Image (cartoon, rainbow, N blue to C red; front, side, top):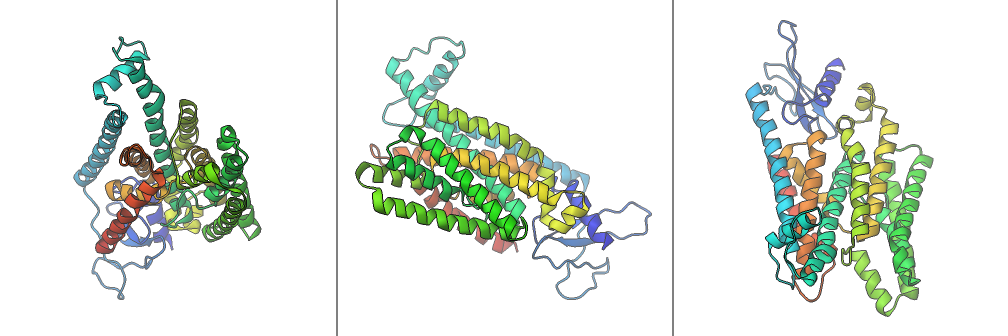
Length: 413
């Protein structure tokens, strides 16, 4: 119907509230030029909506949606200001959190010492720290905290993209079996005592899983959301079985503890080279992903509507899935399988700034970085001198948070 195409076009080119389309099941206002003789109506967008409309008189069959008055310019301005303030607050909060968490640990440090140590590396004055204090800041804590920020940002960004291209609110960065593939590679390296090659073998395992999942979906008839999800489930099952078999037959002693810690997700021992690789991958892959935010908005209306709007659906889906999978593979090879960040954070970000991906993607990245920085700090300090795998902490924090988000959505509906 022409009116449905108009609604989709209006939403993709910028919704009245957040610069993007409404989430599935919600409606988007369509503005008509004055004097055109057409009445503004609303249509459903995405799965779960009725897809029907009714006129200004409010008549229609049960279940159809009523008219919604378009927002005024003042309301749009307030909404835009809110998104700007949320983004700035997250940026400031992340910077402050990095400085604060570096001071937390067995050695007593202050934020001023951390700042002075960092500035001294870039031509600033001598911070007046002992070599031990400077080494703790620069060689132990700072690379780990920055690594946690990079991993959290990348996982949250990938989770938001996966949920968009598959139109599945339960999708996460490990949807294509990447975690299982990386686990197989990591376990092989740990069993052979090749600890230095662990990031390489884990990344290769993730890429093998990616190729297998995309190839299986293609052989099944094409890269649709349903086939992609099912292919990922199949690859995850095979990878999980291989990992369990390797552990059962070969793991013992120290190798078993190392494997268990990696499988639960851990940032222990992260150094500057690993942090640098994660940050570089985040910039190289994350920036182009964010640049394609408008394309992700189109997927909210389904493949047919996206194609009608000029989106090359198959090419965009392949590109986005491949980019997020490579980024996830780099991050997993460094940190292991850290759950819930890519699943929960995009939903929390939508509550803050709405569903438009132009704002949602960077806000998700900042929120994920902030969450993982504090989760890793809790993991390394809560039971000092023992250290928890950070994946345990994210699960303990993420599960109740996800339940709260579900309850909030039920209340809104």
